[in-house]
Amino acid sequence: MRVKCVLCDQIENINDETLIAKRLRNRPIHTYMCPKCHDRIDARTKVRLSTGNFRLYRDKKTEDQW
Image 1: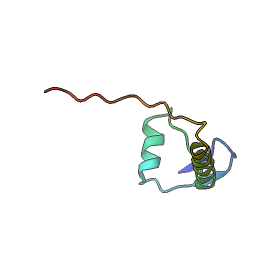
Image 2: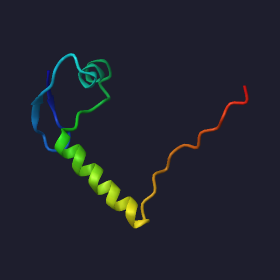
Image 3: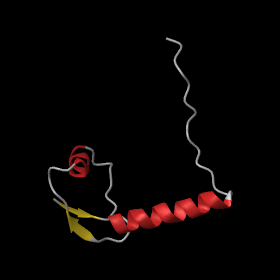
Image 4: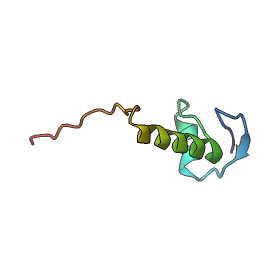
């Protein structure tokens, strides 16, 4: 399967049997990011988290009483 990175527009071939390929086929809203861009975003996010000025707003999980 040929996929295109949404950030750098690099075209790559991935195996049709992988989980990423299945997600891209079945849910068109999912986008592909190459490993190089993914690692770059991951590293920059960790740097911003370490400064203390960056917060991830995640939903608070409540436990079910049952």
